[in-house]
Length: 316
Image 1: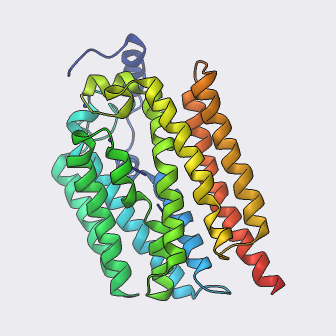
Image 2: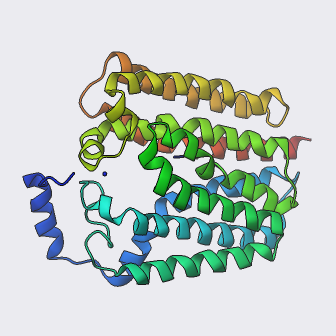
């Protein structure tokens, strides 16, 4: 399961207030609120990187038991980390337009119920992964603690490098998928971690530029708040160049072949293109467009990794 990762009270804008009024007339159902706390789209992306890690760990198709139990366990633990994030950030979420309507921020779900929900997912995920091997179970638990506690509670509010240091937790799923199948650490699995780790800062800083005023109002020291938007644009560009270089390592080490080299190079050059426009020819909404591209970039990158692996297996 490969691996991204940071609030002053002020009235919300009139547009946000109008949205709140509209939403209040269609209150989400309880199950949807619980689902929202698990950040299902984020978990789905993490599970894709974990699945690719599983498939790359063996020449053919990985064992069904490892895939099924591994994805369920990693999914439960990832969902638990997301739910704990909702709990720990509930006070700050009320101050940001992006998060003010979350279930705990709005008081639709009581905090103790959310804690029980997250804890249940955490324990269930750990037990399921322990059925595979202890290494995967404990590595996944360490990732959960790294994101839900170290990043959310401390790093997010301590340093503008929060997303760089904390990104290692979000970069772990490909490694977790690998160990779920093999029960062992492998240098190639660590390359997958490096890919997600290097991708995370430009992905999140593009969002932070778009939401800079939100983070400033909430008092979170994101890079655009502490060092300015122009500096952050420079860092986004530098990290995309770094990502291009790191992206060559799977091919240079013989882990992947020509299909991956071509596909990853095109995807990474596309990211550099978005970052270059953000730095030198920015336009309204381009930071948000860069953020959206980064999501599809990572998904496509891991699909290319998997496609290259299967093509190579069929040929040789």
